[in-house]
Image (tube, rainbow, N blue to C red; front, side, top):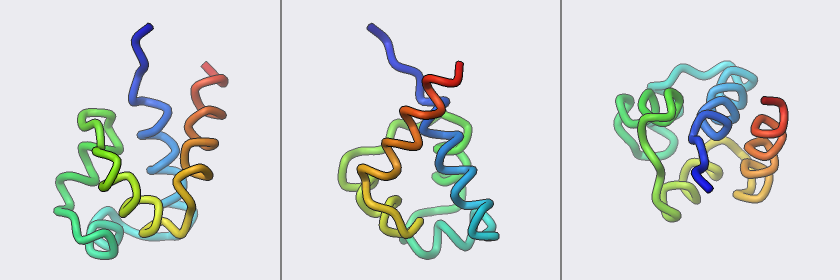
Length: 77
């Protein structure tokens, strides 16, 4: 069964916007390039587990919270 990255992309974007941050601000917090954040938010990149840890930390979430957001978005489709 194939899984789409769109729900994760949506969860990342929604949380970043809730915090009022630009992609550049989130990238700086996670020590990523801004283009990587852009690609994550468009579902064009599949983050490694270590990058998922950095991303969740940068967003002030646990990985489980971020994946709960993913599950919620996936079920909304």
